[in-house]
Length: 186
Image 1 (cartoon, one colour):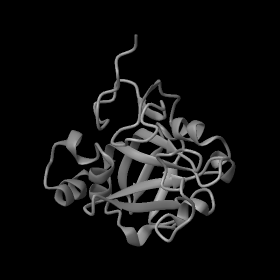
Image 2 (cartoon, rainbow, N blue to C red):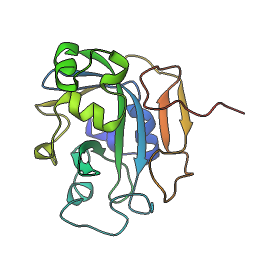
Image 3 (cartoon, one colour):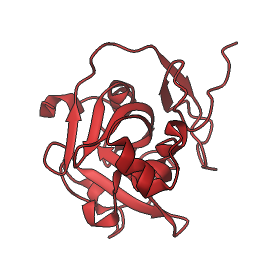
């Protein structure tokens, strides 16, 4: 991707990533769900300032920020946005390539359960903390532009207690691969 792709408000970047193709060592699929975070956001890892754990969020746009949640699961973000220390959490992809590898890593062959949720996604793609700080545009990662402009739905972020009502969760409308259904429109 052109570096200019990441030069936009992080909320806009989170929307723009929906429909892009993300792979790790040739295994992956289409991004169908994201969440936006930045340093002015109380739910963000960067809110309290730079530390060893979140240093990548303060780095260059286009880096992969990986962290462990609950001491169990890896979560992957793409650093970017015009705000300081901003990143987009990749919550779910629609598996397209390497389904056999994903199934072996996850212990299931149900395509809807392979990458629906950030922990599942990282397990299926083989993402670990050792990948923190790597660029998304170089091996083992690849990020390709959308094939078309998808319809996008919006909702509150998941699994947080601070700034939980912010509508900074985005998904591909109608996707059965999102981690949780989006609220019905009014």
